[in-house]
Length: 282
Ligand code: C2E
Ligand code: MG
Ligand code: MG
Ligand code: MG
Image (cartoon, rainbow, N blue to C red; front, top):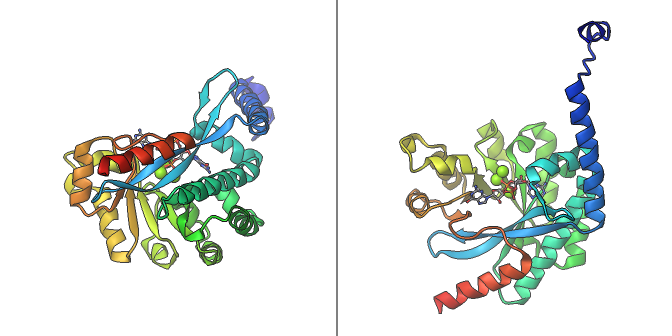
């Protein structure tokens, strides 16, 4: 095999790669079928105001439960959806479904509630993205100011000029913009200042660190300060224990999301969860 590889020049097609490609193609077909047979659904994770401990919104997270009851994690199938282009249709469905749920929650009396939706960079760069967004907002009647699009840091930093312009157009629809997993990329802070974003989401990796020895120099602390200085809202992701919540609050972090407060849940469970939360306060 070494010899044939040499002869093939730059093309190294090893047996392992064959397996990998076949697996990817298999997943792609499975995902396409899953989408058309409604094996995909959304789970909603509440976002909490740390000062009042009340839910102010939720993040919609995509779930895939296969016919035999197994869950495929989004970190595995979203790259395949992006690679195959399926993310365009799936992403539109995610946005519309989350918007409908937002309208339901507003109708149920949670009128300040915000819905956060993850948007892949493949979607964001698609020529029809703006049109799709406007149409989804119009068709569902979702109030744009209560819809938040989560985009990743790396997305914002590639081709900043094009991105800044695109973002300005997206902002004209009235939606909010959050930068997801903030701190994991290599942001140029000068670009950040020019982007019309509303919120930074501190990645879970940094939230985990805040109660440790590195606390003084923690990235979480820096992001909270940065948010304050730029007038942006900040959400800490992946808050799992009370100590983390307290430290975050002391550092001035306004919002948090994590297993401490609630796990991602089905739409029906979310309205029940919110009702229970209201009952507790009464
Ligand atoms: P993300 O947007 O950063 O979402 C946060 C992830 O952290 C979610 O994982 C959530 O379930 C998990 N999480 C929340 N609280 C805790 C906690 O306290 N502890 C721990 N250990 N984890 C927590 P999930 O749902 O597996 O999603 C993974 C990633 O997949 C998301 O990261 C997002 O990048 C992507 N994703 C999910 N849904 C969509 C979607 O509809 N569209 C796109 N483009 N990407 C999505
Ligand atoms: Mg997110
Ligand atoms: Mg995140
Ligand atoms: Mg993440």
